[in-house]
Image 1 (cartoon, rainbow, N blue to C red):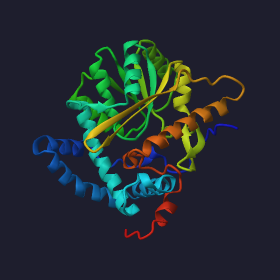
Image 2: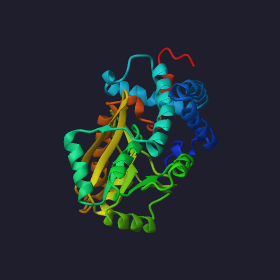
Image 3: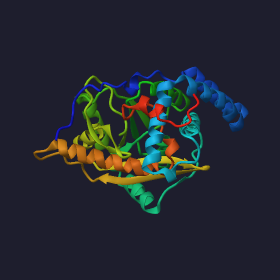
Image 4: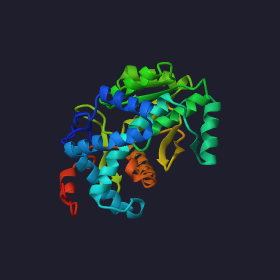
Length: 327
């Protein structure tokens, strides 16, 4: 069994045109700050209708994901056609951008956690032990900033593969330049970056990375695992990075139900071990473990996985199979 190291033929998520610019983000933030949340939501509706109609590739990806989620665990999705659910998916993404900004700049609300996970998180912080936290594009991971705000010595380093996220990161960093959550733009994991992250972890800092995006590059290292009852490519980078850093690895996510946020924090591995004769099998095993955990997370709030690209590389077929589609 090998981990394929090859160019991905489908359109890479990083090549999809960004659905907004810094000026537009600032306008929406201004509307919320000066006219309130109700006005923000009112303006957001036609904006997201526009993007829903114009962004065919993202729309097809949403259909593709929702179709699989309905097959995987139908009871977790709200009622309605996939067309209406997909628009709600888009609308939720628009609202999440405001949530991310508020999480970065405003007073953070109380985030609910299971007592056992809350205790594990705070014990880790108290020990001043660095770690790797693997997140995803599920929910609003920016609310993890509450951890660093409550612990003045903790520094969190968030690795961004998405070149389009740079504009949003710029907006947030301008709003709060003294934040101890560092946003690090990453194109590839070269030796200097790896050594830098190792130094940070050894100092007790946290490194946060998303595990559900195929990395940018001509030959991204991926492995194929089962995800939502189908086969999908996941990056092996998080597992490789965890092995190199030699630190505990955790899974972290935060999602919203009603008006409350819920944060999950669980141990993934005390230390990722890739030794032995079959490194490829070990990488696939760790990646499959992550994919299973992500499936469980998504069932809690399926419309909050904001991965609007062709994850399974068959999005066109998925859209054609939507019954009663009117677009």
